[in-house]
Length: 384
Ligand SMILES: Cc1ncc(COP(=O)(O)O)c(C=O)c1O
Picture 1 (cartoon, rainbow, N blue to C red):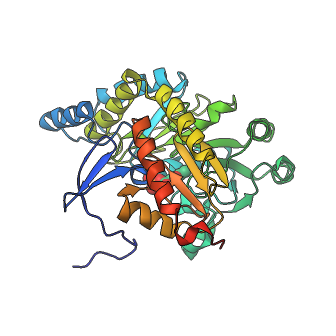
Picture 2 (cartoon, rainbow, N blue to C red):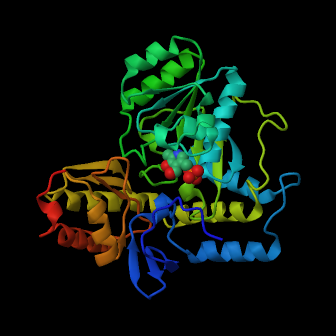
């Protein structure tokens, strides 16, 4: 049987990983500055995470949501402490798309409305509701086009007012910092306008922190730079450090009703143990402070590279914009220098999403390789 061939692959086969390092089947060592789409938060195979999962698996790996599971409560308790949302409720699921799907449903259950406002260049996942609010027609099938969605430019409060005044908007969904789109973000005033306008027009504000959450931006959630509180926050990626888990933080204004949301696998014992140990390590190793220090160091070094035209993002969710398309540069980094990096919808943007445990010495290795790849290469002069 062949695999359904939907992923273009780099010719690298990782077989082992530890902290910021990955080894392939030929024994080559790679520096991971991408974390498998921003998933690795506390470092690959962190010993505390590995032993927590191993010990849990020996006891019980799974039972359904029809029985009590105190690890879910423990995870919610720890999340309360670290996230700054003590009175919100937690719904657990398995992925980012699923978290957004549940958020959109909750909003629509709450206010009985349908239309969603999303933003140009957004990415919210591939399931039906999530892909309908994603600004990429290529990944939407006709069956996904039933939901009424309007895409607006970021930072245009006037257009928001115009749309909200029509009275049919159920929710606004916005990324803390756009990931796949290429590291654009709303300004503080815009986030405050979004918050105020949704309240004035009985629409729900959904903050997608699936990529920008869990410390990656230098705060627990990226929207916390703007002093607003959304009604719903969605999380995944860094939440499980590779174990599939997603979550929805839900304001107390939503009343839970039995059966309104549900999942077979979401919140299972193994996923909760993974999520709990991620939070414990984030706290014990003061990783968010570390993110800010390393981010400053990275940005200072990036400023010295003349080919870098713009540095985007925050914390360790960063983008280096060049005036040429970066696919060859990424290939040079991965095949010649053995460093994983990411791309974006913006073809000139190199995306940097290392584990949050990354150190200055690793940043130095990255910049040495970047300089070497840029020097004497076609990208040095070509402007595409
Ligand atoms: C901001 C954002 N939302 C949602 C998703 C979808 O998450 P998943 O692939 O876990 O469904 C992603 C994935 O890249 C994302 O970056």
